[in-house]
View 1 (cartoon, one colour):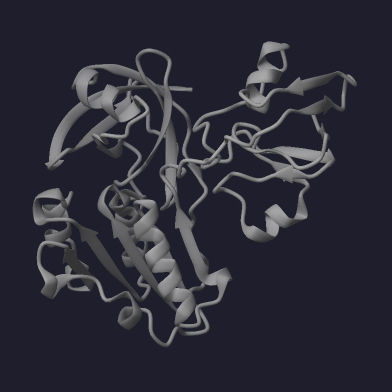
View 2 (cartoon, helix red, strand yellow):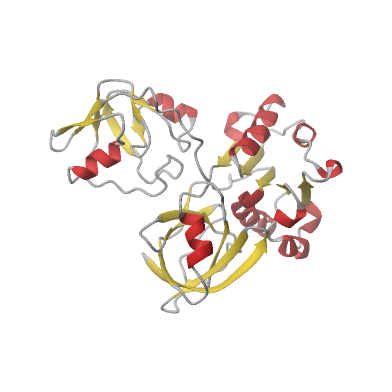
Length: 316
């Protein structure tokens, strides 16, 4: 855990603020790579993940951008309403679940709304490395586009394409942009679920291999749980067996019996709670594992996923 001070808060666009964080002890912060995020511990006990969007060579500060989301589960609302300059917070060290692929010939970056935060950092890193890339930033309107001044002043401004829904002439033509992918081209997309699926579906229709498609979700889509049933989990180290009722998650049941699992997003997005499965077949409801990793059925996210078999034996 790192104690940081909010040294500045800046309105970046309609409904979006950035927060500059520096070490409370005045020390350099841990190094990070493009695509990294941190866990931010908020007043009231909430823990939320936010992508770092400052230059990846900076150690004197971290910068996060936060949308005041109407569908917030409390995190973004807390930051916008309760966190101001001068306040102290606890954060984790950076983790990267959305890293740039090494040795890519060309990188296509797509950001929707607040999804610009990790994408902006990626553009900084690719420019620093001298790599070929272009950035497509899509928002409903120019007023909702964050970091516009920073993008306009960037040395790679000529590689940035702004797409606003309010102007039909600037809307993203994903099929055209994604046509004729190269063997070493890689695509990165972050933003609302519908936007990401549109970009990824367009890429697949243009022949992009799955291994060259990279995405990061900020939140999971709602899951129909009306047909959920009960199942059991077994802790392999102790032999204890606990029933997981339809209205509880595996994490909730285990915690109620003193078995702690590190959690963060509670939606199967971040991978913090990833747990090995020794026996049984999980019902995967996460957005963290790839399709191949889910098919292996040897790990799952107990914060949201369930079971297809009566019993799951967990490596705990």
